[in-house]
Length: 198
Image (tube, rainbow, N blue to C red; front, side):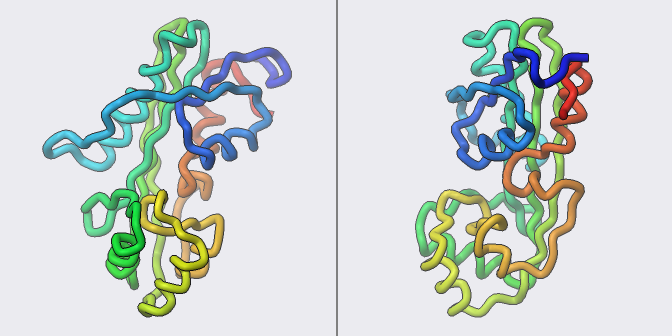
């Protein structure tokens, strides 16, 4: 087994500052790369299939630039009543998303792929996480958006910030999954590649 103190070429195929911060928790040296892919859903594609496919495509998109590396790809969608919520991008869309989420649960699906660019071996999974919202009043929604402006976040909230106040409870195996990278599962699949953490 390799310890994390050895030089390991680990690459995060993401420009997300949230995923980068999560991966830093493991204390492993890594690089980041920008995966240039089309993230559109295919007709009739389920949320689980979408995030699994995109996580793999992100890892593969940077593989040629990083031979002999372990490449991490990840993607996430939020769903209410089986329908995918995108990033709101603006205040009005965020208001509408949070109105829809009020008193309901939102399911976050996070796809994770670890691709070994030397061997071609690929490990992929989809991890669910459930967020149960309080019943929200319009003024609460507007005050929250004024304070945090979470327009680049699926579901229009940041659980690691003030968004936690909108929630009744969280349900899932790993709270990091909600932010965008399921670290418990990642540690397990890294171990299969001989990398132990810590």
